Length: 276
Image (cartoon, rainbow, N blue to C red; front, side, top):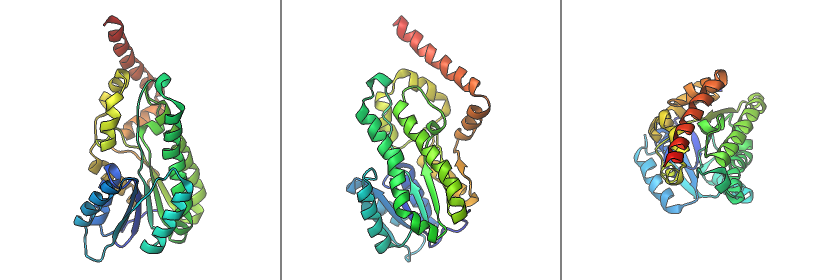
């Protein structure tokens, strides 16, 4: 399943008010899509909609936003139902909402684990569940935005990686289940990306986590979004921007090497802490 032409397509972007979601919305606006974005904060949504409208290809395009907390299944059903009635059924669904709050495992409470699972697993589950009948009718496409930490656990990200691994499992299962229905699906696994969420993420990173992530580089949301769109055009299941593709191959074919490098970086930091 591939999408070659985005002109006139109805695109629903969850987490579309900032970061990768907003960057994808702007690109799709330039490609002629009708875009509706979903997020919790109205102020960000309004600002994002102005940017999306400014990027439009023609005056025939339509843009809208809806406030939504995707962790609440009943709210998702209601808001998505209203969006379909008012905006039209989706041809493409991009699930881009997410956040990370790295810390040592002992410092991460149940509430944070619960929030991570509700956002990254249940939230994606809820939006797909609400929109799948329409996506089946239109032979549509789903993109779940995951992370490198969806296939590789990293020091300091226990709750985040657990929820992203779960998202990977959901997406792989759906790939098999939706193929006969003509619905395409991709999973985007970017490395560190310079989003507003990444700024928050960095505030409390353990030094070991910083050391492990230093070599992977930092991408811009626009770069990641471009790779996302190209991946959908080619019908790729796994979309790995930047260093993610290399990391994925190393983790799959030479996991001992990945472990060696991470363990080495962690030992260096802990040795310095022990000598301090």
